[in-house]
Image 1 (cartoon, rainbow, N blue to C red):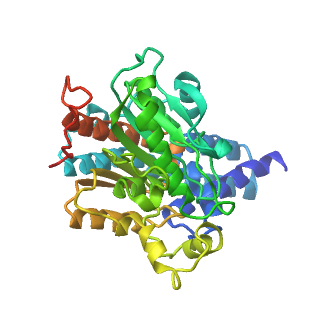
Image 2 (cartoon, rainbow, N blue to C red):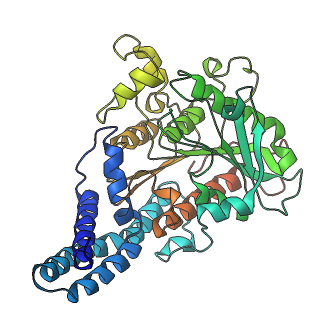
Length: 410
């Protein structure tokens, strides 16, 4: 490629990426993954891309003729779009603040619009806080393992609040490493114990193996987390995408014997849930969801096995005793339609369950894997929400039996 062509190519790619954020060109699984990847840098790291296209525009000035004009026009258009996207982090902070207000949670100073400090990139957070790796919680090899994150000075036998994180990947792929790690590091630094979970995947294992494994991991936490400084009486859960589905379903089906074969006596109730960009209603499949569920995950059709599909749908399992929820979803998510989260939130509100809902402007699927400004605001909001629930449920000085089941906003 000739040097004078580089600004033109970069500008064209930039315009395509920005256009894919403002008006996604494909929303059908699995092709939507390509669309998400092509626009991810523009939607989640616009400041970085502004630098790239400013440099490309400067390079175009050194060209002549058509290359100069095309390079300046394309990179100028990309810069204009990116300038708008750069403001989405500040807008996301206000949206998250509104979601916390729905729950009666006092706003932290981090949500004033300035980027919160202390949100680390995933590799650094992992090296600093992952204390125990690949602990076995079941007999399923690496699919039955978990990691424990906490600060080095956290005392064994302490009473730190606990967050379980469930990875995504369409129930068919993924791992406990690499997802939500900015959040895990942020919470660990502030005294939380975090547990990341692997679980059996389709198509080698069919539903409900995944939710059974998540429940079994919660059972492990109940029994063993005090040895890592955590409080077995306060366990919250989070996850993204398929992990959000599993997290929400776990929170809404405490002690369901159908999902706890062989350990029905264990209390799997949870104190709070934070599902992000999740799939919450299997009975709706606008983005190619049914083909994935029928072919690989459940292995039956909704028409012939509707009860299984409905029982697997968090939006259809909501009851008045559900814990408080903070639901987060991007408005231009091309992989999971934001309507999935809207249905869950509507069901929670209908049941008078405390719920805050943040529709983040122009956020893409899986945005929180990057330690971006938007992720920083989201992490701060999740920490404030979970801390508020913990403070209401576990009064200062409460012992093993001192837990109070008081939901946020009630």
